[in-house]
Amino acid sequence: MNDKASTLVLERIYQHEQSHPHKVFLTQPVGHGQVIDYTWGQTLDQSRRMAAHLKSLGLPHGAKVAILSKNCAHFFMAELAIWMAGFTTVAIFPTESADTVKFVLEHSESSLLFVGKLDEWHKQAPGVPEHLPRIAFPLAPPTPYEGWDDIVARTEPLQGQAWREPTDLAMIIYTSGSTGQPKGAMHSFERMSEAAQGIINGMVDTMGANREDHRILSYLPLAHVFERAFVETMTFMEGHIHVFFAESLDTFLQDLQRARPTIFISVPRLWLKFQHGVFAKMPAKKLNVLLSIPILGGVVARKILVGLGLDKVELAGSGSAPLPPELIRWYRRLGLNLVEGYAMTEDFAYSHTQTAQFNEPGYVGTPYAGVQVRISEEGEILIKSPGQMLGYYKRPDLDQQSFTDDGYFKTGDLGSRRPDGQLKITGRLKEQFKTSKGKYVAPAPIENRLNANPLIELSMVSGSGFDKAYALVVLAEEWRPKLSQAAVRNDIQAQLTELLAHVNAHSADYEQLKMLVVASEPWTIENGCLTPTMKIKRSRIEFLVQHQLEGWYSQSQSILWH
Image (cartoon, rainbow, N blue to C red; front, side):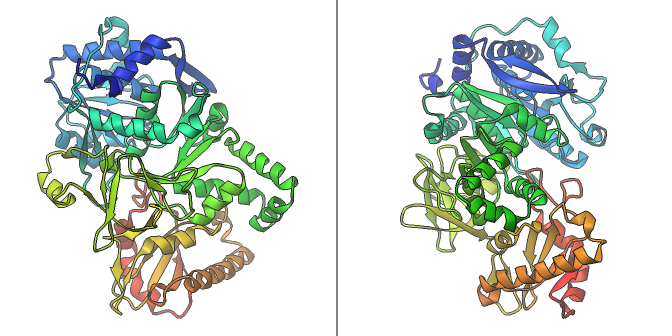
């Protein structure tokens, strides 16, 4: 046993197995309102049996084993089995196309694939190399592959405590592909464990003495670093957090009500959708008046949080993309302790977070313990994190481009820091574009101002080579079906005109928008306009509208309907 083993995730797992085997760890919905609870003992028993099976296959130490599945209890179990068997996990986003599935499996040289809970396996299956062995999770679509339950039932559990060296490769996390071909970030047990422990330490004020009564809902893709670090690895390390899984998008509110999470992690798109759902029941202006009334305001705020299933939340977090400051203030006004953070796949989501002391909306907080940060001459944020990846799998050329000579990761994000250390993200280096007047425009701050409006679900600011920028906007879900009504359309047109004037009034002259163009259909993961973590795929959207730009710019109206 290595002297650093006590700090590593597998050591923690074995401790939980021994100290509280009968404590429920995972709650999995299985349809029709039914759930299955798995205790720590049951979770480890299944993982040990699958680990023994994997070891029997004779794969070399460190072999890559892939998981293609939505979030479920068996994703956690499979990850543990892969680690205990001496292998490395490769998780694939459950919404990826067959081409991307094929790329990741071949690039990672995966030796086996776990097929899990999926919506469109029939479209993805052609991307799996014919020779690749497969094992089906209990919630997988019907397949001819041998099932998890059958293997577990006939296999004796792996005995003892299988250790991994701190420098062993635990997982390869492939980026979600918002900027082209996915890249595989390699994470070791040592760095991954240190990052997860740092996240736990950062939550310590919330966890308090009552550490055994926390609940969390797992629903953001586990193939992404955000969920992998803040939900899976963090709960592996902590051991006293009950993880609930979401069944589907249709049952999400029921899943949330079942979990009544005390810790809730989400992304800007969902925080906005929650708010829009509230505004659909009560107009923003009326709600604002009610919240301003003493006593009644507190009752109304509480009722909203109960309706959302967030009334028990002690710590709410947002990451993956910038959150409009107005939205943070709105949630805090309801009494929700919403904090924003900033991190990347490459540092295992361990970079910056807001705290009780440093939580100014519009900033992403201060560095986690051990994280070093500086701003380059070009304004790029450079990070050196304890959770830093070992490099990109089979891409030493990218490693060389991605780090400074003294080991700081080049994030590609533009930012500034206050004297107290709080970091502000001002845009992406590569997203900046130059207008025909020679001025650079950073889209993110303008998009944030647009997205803060209840009418807008998503926006994209662009306009390279034109005299002014423009914004393409997707209307909030509740308004889209009503656009055939002339009165509604006219009202939205008037509100968008007002919004454009407001945004331009708060922008430098070279950043001001010529027009807002209302998108004809929403951007989704399915139509290729959003990544699996719901960030916009800028290049894809720009490609789809490129032939219409000249026509839009030639018009005199400031609000156009695509």
